[in-house]
Image (tube, rainbow, N blue to C red; front, side, top):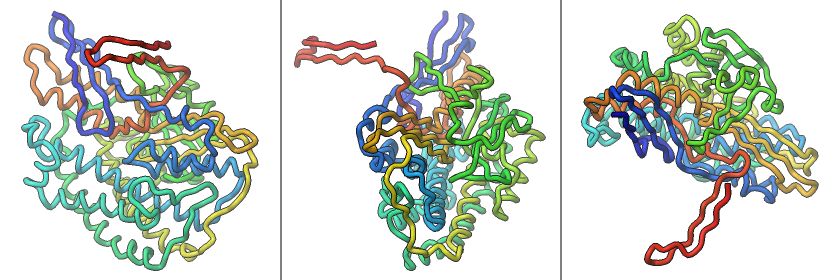
Length: 474
């Protein structure tokens, strides 16, 4: 008989979600869907607040990648001020963002995904976690912990605390880099480089063991989107949008952040709070695209740092066109960690990095501003409108995880079709369905926002459970 398998919750990701797998009468997968079950309304409850508050407010969207929201929000506020921030502030924001990407990628790769890679997708779920990794592979686990700590400590040194720092502000940053913190960060670079290069040595030996997963984990033609600089090189903080197809051919290039609504549209599915962005010229759902580390590897001409350029060249040898398997998000994260460490060192050695002029001051000079940057999980957009008093009247946020929603759903279906057999369910089958979501490293707290008016059902219950009153909308 036809039946439905529900995986609730999806484990080792940030946020709350479930997966439903529909089986036909023969026990074969008929459909599979990824449902995000939590909702957060930052776009609505920030209305009426001063735009100066937006970086600190929107950073509270997430405890994993608050810096990403600080950066995108502050860039939107820079546009409202109509200022060019001081060059040193630009470099310091970049360092903070690079540290954010480093710590987030280390968390994803080592803490959330390495248990599958090291212990096996079919291993005992009681030990298939970071503690099991610590017990069986202590050196690799320590490298992961230390790489994440490296990024977190830079955030703390620059921003004052590791989570939700308020250092990035409209117009720049609120304090220059100190001599002591400059020396402390530089001193940690060699150790971080050693640890990530050891991880490369291990990963290159083992990823070939996962041919079935590489072949089926969201492996399909799609568009890929992200930021590049004027030379088409890797870019996380600034730059313009490039979109390539499955063959690696450029579909659109040097698209402006302020024009994002011309090339990105959003759709809402009834079974999830997560919006589904798509490439507007191709329509829904044909305009499916992917963002994040894998997409960034596919769209760039080069990384722009020596060691990362070498690793990127090896990565691109995996496919003649774009790399299509989302399993390779793991490989791409390691390349980005390496790039971030190298780039932090380069920026710290810039001659003006200790300059004390790190903020431009102004009153609002525009009523609308768009900020775009690359979060660990992909392209992030903050779009604000204000009134004459500088109060927020409208907000739209397109979150990196949301950009991958169509691809995650397609990936869940592909993996379920390949691995799940209803006549004899095994835990490892379902773990692989979850694992394809972990490839994208979704941040669901960040990504669920309103499009139009959301349904509402509130009940007031008596101690015995009887309904005293209720309100419904939608």
